Image (cartoon, rainbow, N blue to C red):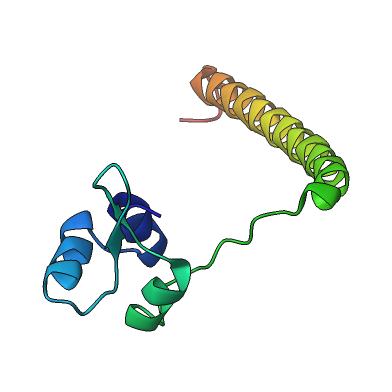
Length: 112
């Protein structure tokens, strides 16, 4: 992974990654385009508490993952629709309460 990707995974700045590389605290090597490359294992040794290793899916797992993604997308869409409906109801009730509050109260002769 690049220093920018490593920084995002570790939750630090890119400059912190570059400082660690320059001081040889973090192992990295240059690829054939002269760009720094860092392995997830080396990053997890230097930043053990903040690294979230990303597992790359095997091609055989892809259909299952796509099915799970589709299910979660449907669930998230339903939750968003429910939230929008609740917000619309809240706004209708608020408008109704404002309308009722603005109504002029009738003063009867015995009320002063």
